[in-house]
Image (cartoon, rainbow, N blue to C red; front, side, top):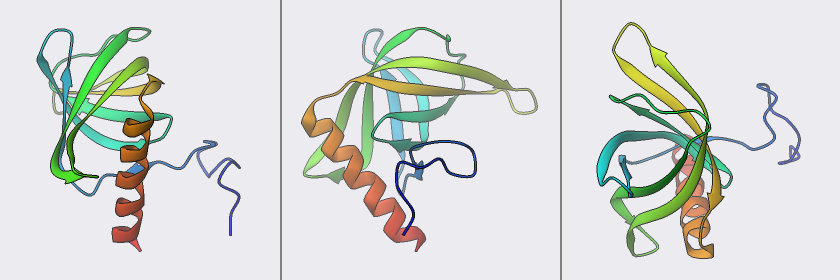
Length: 122
């Protein structure tokens, strides 16, 4: 079994899990739709959307789940945008976020989502 803290092929210390459901992302401060979760783990997430993201910017996110997790329909997070990229060919915008504020309940929900996604891939 691989050490979960050793870097993967991309040099990352934490395994990213593709989500097994649709998760819409909203900016809690502006009540604005930002995009969808591409992958996530207990320390961060990647989002794709139609609007550009700002690097080094803090966001309060509401993740709206298409299927309840641990009997909840949403997850609230405080995140820092580490990087943002424009996909030139389709007008989409990618961003990577580090989770900087999350309740124990939110982290449990993320772990449950990641575990379910990993089960579906096996």
